[in-house]
Image (tube, rainbow, N blue to C red):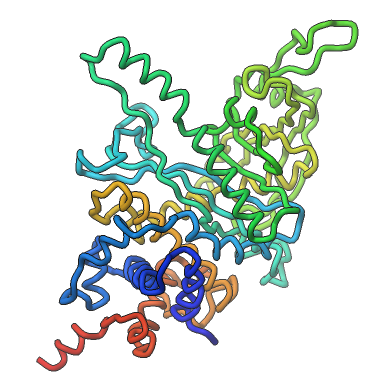
Length: 468
């Protein structure tokens, strides 16, 4: 069986189309592996120390990010090619979300104050940092295997998010208090031309081109998003072979088309998603979907040919209302999860498929947690305008490759190939990011041939300690 480290290295060698020279590619692979496996603070210098390169010239890695001419988006082309075979249907499910990466330097390019998503509901806090827009493919692993033959509804894998795009999307900085009218007017115009929704449209169009290059011209991209992208900029955009599934507000003003005698296009009678949920004349439908390692009953309502005048114009949408899910807290009190309201411009897929993909969207949040908490995304201390964009993309691309090769080498379960779990994690079936990183560290430390090929000296410090 091929080790994770060798499989990741062989997949990273497909970056030869990204870099102009082979030595630049090998330097990028070495830096990507060191950033991925570095156990300490994930700066460029500390990753070099992990690789045993502290005695060599360190400027080459910084120049790789600041001066070398390569496109960070092309790092994900091998990932996209590996992701496509997982989707056997006519669509490829992708989740999109933005995340904030904390920084401290006030002079770092593209940094600004953003609202902290971890703030409590009664007080919004601000953080200084970067905003990264990420798109992750939602692999339908629940279609591959049922592991519990006694209970066919029970599964150990619902989905796995694989990042296929990561782009720094800075906001337009607001002028200070002493700014004149011309500066304020220029700020308003630039804000209309450069915002998160417009960046989403441009990035999704480029991702569509990348999937076409990889041979998925006949598959529709089903983009699952949260409420940030449920607006007129997204729904009115010219997106070829791209469908949007977005969570909408419960008080959005919706209507149907006016009947034939009227000359108006929009009906004067309006309704909201919340009123549809409360309308007893519209019955709930029931289905079973994969939620939390098991097939569970979900109740929903569907209203077709809905018009959202302010958001989608004359484009007909579908409204899907998901009923609150009851659950018991510690076996005492029965609580309810919040209801969900979804608007989509897709009219071919069933409501069950769209709701399942909306549930699978949680995997992109897992990606954000792995990247920031486990891999130290944003800890690299780079100040160059190119480096602040390429350093996170290089780490996220390496993370995607690690997830894919783990599925290829060991399957969807946490088999015996991984290192033993601590006592408090016994029974875990799905391999975590730390499981994969720890296994790759062990394999790379034992593979001297691979270290020699990558010009790494991981065991140098351990050998010095033994000799002393």
